[in-house]
Image 1 (cartoon, rainbow, N blue to C red):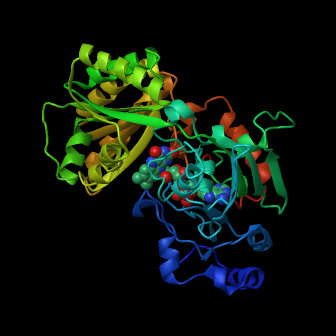
Image 2: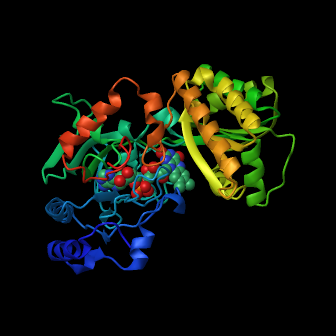
Image 3: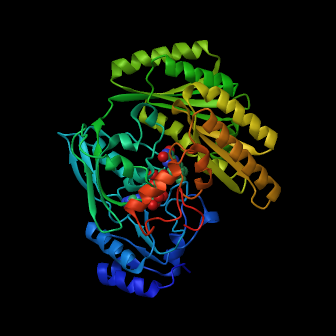
Length: 468
Ligand SMILES: Cc1cc2nc3c(=O)[nH]c(=O)nc-3n(C[C@H](O)[C@H](O)[C@H](O)COP(=O)(O)OP(=O)(O)OC[C@H]3O[C@@H](n4cnc5c(N)ncnc54)[C@H](O)[C@@H]3O)c2cc1C
């Protein structure tokens, strides 16, 4: 059962505005849209689930929300890792999975215009058929939507070279809860007219406006790529190697790492042989034109010879590369089996601090007696830090809480960030004041108020006071 008291009137008004076929409120629907990838711990069901099929449906939903003062929570595929699409105050779950058309791929201007519900991988496939490339590749790309990516400013392995979602958003169309439509940005790369509303909306986690149309910059597709897996007998040796690769002008598109607990878990999960002497594994991808890739591959191999890599594999064709990616993309489900609950964080540290940060966090985890699994986008300092706990063990949970706060404080102290791509959402809002101490959180609230005076759009997220 949802939280909003006048659900019946709201449902009636929604059916009238959109037609019955887009409005659902059976228990199955309410349960399905109660949570995201954070799992059942944070789940709260909406009162009604709506699937818009065009911007006029979105406008109709917002009109009902205004009239009845009902919260609206936009939602893409619901694979967020910070509880962003959980309707914590009940009300309407506005699900974009049926508003999923690729409206235009403009090959001359290298851009695509899409509805928010397009699945990231579907867009990539479509543009690659035409020799173009949309590089942002969250590990969830086969399910996540472009709307969810924009609202979270999603990143992924290739962001080391290519940047995050924000770097590709040329223009946005969005609806404010007031019913006004906002268009920000254009079909050009340079545009400094007016306040940059588009940049404010990217990463706003569905708290300021509902995004209805997205124009994305595309690139020419790289002609070839190679992917190497390098294994080290010590994590610190591996992270020093990464630092050398970054400084060495090799220009990799991907620099990923997994610590020993992540490797062990994924090998067990995929039933692959375990090599206990491997303490850390790294993936290095290089892309570009064939001659250039060949030259950089040779330089990478000469570094491998110098740096005490114990084993390595080079994948030059798509099939072999897929096998290596398969390993990397299965880490999340693999480590989720280590303990009943995975507290999944995505801190970022300055690249010069990567080796220190990895050793420091490993040592803090040892002192706290908490199993911590580290993996992620080491090239840009985005370390997925997973604290594995049993929620039944209250003592362990309390130790994990203390450890988490220590990690966040450390990250902020070395001028990193508490989240690099998953967003603040529900799960990290208590920690936001660690990073913003000088009135910025108050400014966030004032911005929110200007967009959404009645606090109806995705309330209870990011910087909410308890009870907001
Ligand atoms: C296995 C796994 C791997 C992942 N790997 C990565 C990774 O490598 N990089 C990364 O960045 N993230 C990663 N994530 C997190 C997640 O996939 C991303 O945050 C993704 O962008 C969420 O997309 P979604 O469509 O599921 O959005 P949802 O989870 O449904 O929503 C996310 C936020 O966007 C808002 N929103 C959705 N649509 C709209 C809209 N149209 N208008 C306004 N607001 C909207 C919601 O209100 C919510 O706040 C991973 C998640 C999983 C489960």
